[in-house]
Length: 418
Image 1 (spheres, one colour):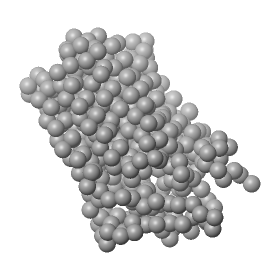
Image 2 (image 1 turned 120 degrees about the horizontal axis):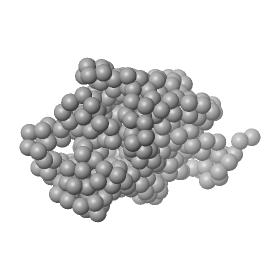
Image 3 (image 1 turned 30 degrees about the vertical axis):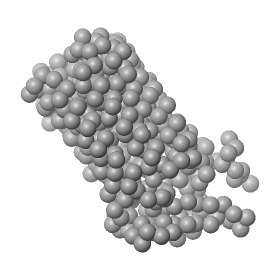
């Protein structure tokens, strides 16, 4: 009989956390390698930064388009098949970027294809699986899994820079794509799975909002607005931060270190956020994270030294990294698990759409004015203002344990009662 106590390391749900974290660590290679390879691609083919940044936007846009369909698929067939298949395809597509030519359409098609598939290896795919295993420690489980992305943020930039210096950008793409395929598929197949007890299937089906009920709720739209602004700050700074810092006279190696600090701060933010969400009202936690990220964007706008840039990047990483944990957590608490992956897929569409717009805005700002400063200031103000909407949200549902089993109290957002 497998252990049923979430607090023990022998509990099977922690294997799903491990597999999800490994999958996300590998899939984020496509994100964290991009800032390092932006300038080499622009120099190789005489493309503008906006042109190259548009490839990241194409990737994010296709991720947005695929969010809801992949979420729906996970709700129907489970996470393991979706994640393993996605990692296999991502690896092949990313390796094929080593064959890029001067035809810019090829850049956009390949990155767009990566984006469409990559959603299958994001929290959209495994958030439901983890939520099905955990009740008391759901925030911690989600936080630990998403830490895979933060660890990737620390490891991938210097790894990509080292490969770039050693073998050039073409072979770097080939090796990184091969790593995703070889390491990712076995990890997903071995560890990621939903909880398949009869009791959990009944509870998840009977309790919780349908997709239509969730989308019709005011609080869902508040969450979408917050996710959009948070993603806009994250993607705008992440894609262009290496270029911004080197423009200000900071060495490329130090810029890569700054990106690693982004990942480190994101790791700390996610660990702390998961712990806090299990103990405090998560919307208040989310607001504090957004305020930190907005402050970081404001400081980055005028950073002219490595220490200043590092502090700004760490604030952004801490805030946006922790905020990534809060979205699936709040969705599971407000709407239950019945349509969690589908609703999170819609949320992911908003996140990815902002990730598509942000780098374009930053690239356009630099190409027209030679500076990122004005846009970063505006983004910081808008993000903080929208984040205040979180303070208007009601208390979410609580799942309580009793001697007779699980007693579920679902919040009726429209009626305003429990």
